[in-house]
Length: 164
Length: 76
Image 1 (cartoon, rainbow over the protein chains, first blue to last red):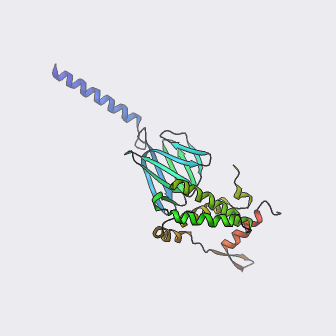
Image 2: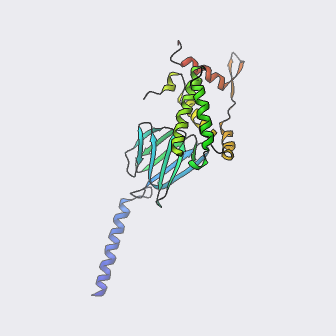
């Protein structure tokens, strides 16, 4: 009687094991995680690491990306990317602009030119550059110089807002 | 999506370079010195015609001239 019960339990565990094997191949991600790659030309901050959520500053608006997000390509504004990791903690990086690609099967790639944690920025340097860029933007330089100063202002103001 | 810098003939590549440059300059001193080295570019090029090398030009200057030419304000 007792041995029969044991056998039945063993049978049940084996059948669930078979079912999960059929469902998942080795390339799959855990169902509630995203595989994040955050790469700069000179450094990879994340290499296909499992994370819970990523908030990105897309040109079309701020968005939070969770597992099973629809595939899409988003151009990024200079701004703060927040990564919520498996352990529950979150990390913030200021990126200078680039692209985020959401691939099928919860794979997210973010490419940017420069990206640093907020602690690495100097509030004084930001403030000085803002006043300098404002001078050029309002000055009588070439059309290109003024446009570049406006780009700098956009980045600096986003950075200043993120540091507060 | 219309970007103001496009009207000045600035390319997306240049836009990214300007944004990255200003991010590097905003870093604290120790990181900034290491990072700013990445922003240096001094490429030169020359056009070869009929087996002869043309004038040696700086890529940065040539790019600036090309951007000014492509600005929507100037005649094309």
